Amino acid sequence: MTSLADADTRALLKLAGEVRRFGPREDILIESENPAEVGFLLQGYGFRYKLLGGGRRQITAHLLPGDSCSPDPLLWPAMDHSVATLSPATVVWFRSDTFFNFLADHPAIERALRWSALTEGAISREWVVNLGQRTASERLAHLLCETFCRLEMIGMTQGDSCEFPLTQAELADTLGLSTVHVNRTLQDLRRGGLITLRGKTLILHDLPTLWRMSIFNPRYLQQHDVSLAGLNAAAAQD
Amino acid sequence: MTSLADADTRALLKLAGEVRRFGPREDILIESENPAEVGFLLQGYGFRYKLLGGGRRQITAHLLPGDSCSPDPLLWPAMDHSVATLSPATVVWFRSDTFFNFLADHPAIERALRWSALTEGAISREWVVNLGQRTASERLAHLLCETFCRLEMIGMTQGDSCEFPLTQAELADTLGLSTVHVNRTLQDLRRGGLITLRGKTLILHDLPTLWRMSIFNPRYLQQHDVSLAGLNAAAAQD
DNA sequence: CGTGTGCTTGAGTACCGTCAACCACGGTGG
DNA sequence: CCACCGTGGTTGACGGTACTCAAGCACACG
Image (cartoon, rainbow over all chains, first blue to last red; front, side, top):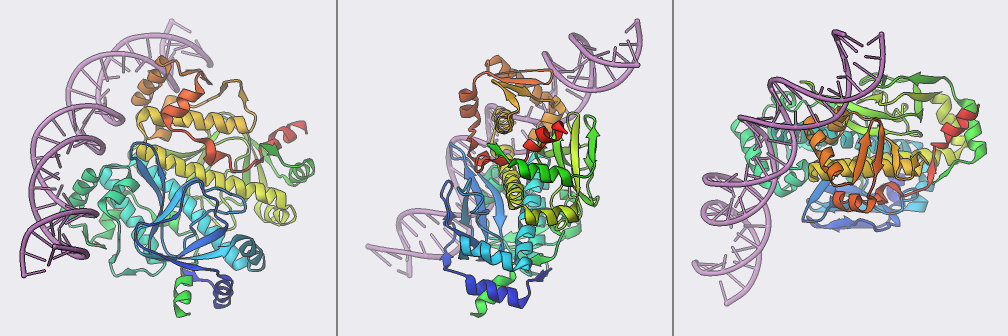
């Protein structure tokens, strides 16, 4: 996984508008609103979600640094879902008209964005498989493998551990399980010596077994090798 | 919902390579293969799917006329899933390099394609909600509403009925249920006077109730109004 | 007329949800 | 300093939705 060329990231940052900081569990965009700008997650974890009646909520995606918050605002005016933070996070915003003009002159960035969109689609398909076919423990293990793999690709793991700021209730809403059952399934994985999850740090002790038991194959994540996550580091230097 | 301008569809058709016919339940593309061309469904129904071990299969999307079979082959070399037909179908193929050069000169077509990709993403998110949060009958009703709505947008419904060529086993694999339970859930909807499903034709007798009971809101499908489905009619004239 | 595919039905079971209570911890304020 | 409170995690008992296994049915097709 490589980042964009220096010149490109510098040009992008020069175009950047506001940078906003969010606390944990704050909404970034809400359903049916009509964002005039495009936002990208620089730091922190976020998620997409939809609400049904009766207190039901489904988390449909996890966002990591480098991911885009909103779909294409020129083609897709109104949000069909909401976006929020899991941890404290920062988001850069670009005016959407100038941003898309800018893309026309920077094909490498446009490529990276399109790749990012395709990857999000691939992850979404895999989540459908996860929810439709896998048992609770397979499902949980698969999510942990996927998250670890995505973090690894953007240099956010340390050895076999990484930050994992989800509460069990949030895990439940992403896995389509109850919090009680998530709790019990986590204990199964712990008892098997496969993971440690305490506070906000996750350790995967036995990746091969986790991959095997959750039928995880990272191919759907690794089709290309350019990320916008480098924006994060570049922005931090300013 | 409108179609592309005549000039655009004619230009597209001139560029078209092979048109291939498929029987029902034939693979169009299989996982990990590396298609050199871009395919679009002209007629018939298709689906994307992934296999796990142990006979488990999840259908991750339904394809209708106008939908693209493969993701962007320039950016996304290897298929992470397979694509197959449900009914007899025809697919047009374009050489991917010439196709993407062509798009640069035809922004309306490029827009339509990007919109199509965004819509597929929105449907995928909704399927995640469906599998994660809805009960069996909500899930089934939601799928029927969605399919009917998508068909309506491309002019493929007659009154309150449409073609619906899925077997119960295929329904089960898209809904993450067993065939037995799909069968019983279908009977519930029939007993409620909500639907008729016989052979390959589906009738939705009471759309308002179906929408309400499945918490269906078509907004996620209706963000734009240009489709490639018109290619079908145009191709038929040749 | 036999055979296969898809649909239907019944009985028994298991996975997972709900409800309810309790615990651990950190932060706040009196 | 410690009582208080809120959030997040843990545990138990019970129940229901949906799965499995198994058999039988209906229809299309050769």
